[in-house]
Length: 310
Image (cartoon, rainbow, N blue to C red; front, side, top):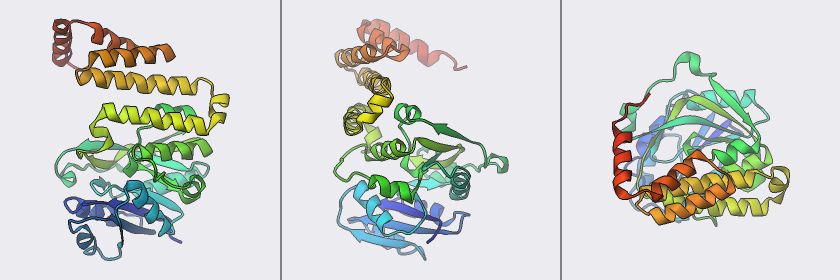
């Protein structure tokens, strides 16, 4: 058994997969295996992967990201599992530092790092983690942080195999937000995670992802949360305010996205539902902007754009 397995799902990723793989094989942590799951690509992705000695490439019919990740984990034998999307890049010390932190916090099943989104060629944008930054991290215990801050980038995550097996991996029947659903199910079983503070993942924005349409994304997350609370009624019993706070947060974010998209009436409804669950400045602000006449909105936006950031 190796210490850590790196799982890279890839679908028509010929444009970027070499860059992602280079960052994986360049890791300073040596006790690892790298598995690419070609999820039915038609653009020669597997041909590019075959140029990397020692990298395992599995080919399967297209089944989506969850299916690819689960297949990769099934074929792996690492004690820990790290995921890397085929269009992202890791810092060379990412695994070394995360493995060290997971060993330090043996009762945490989940860890993640900071990340940054960039455009263009990621390799040219990378910055090194300073030598004294390897231990700059925080530990968070309890479900509240996970449910109220669920937006982990999959390429930043490391998880224990025992936890992956316990929750049954990614839900292949879920066509959206499957990563957040997985993270929260892991935390429900053991509500602790450890976060590396320095940026160790460089993420490329790719159109067509869940985050590319925030209105659609927040609506899908509301459905995921509703199902999680339905399947885990003990959370509502033990944390009576968590569901209200979670739905208030997501409806407030949905309201802001609707307003940004130019749908003030829908934004008003979403903000109102958020405020009924839990008052917040953000939802009040969105509601006010949605109700404001168009000239006032333009004036406020102009002031915001021209005001220096402190």
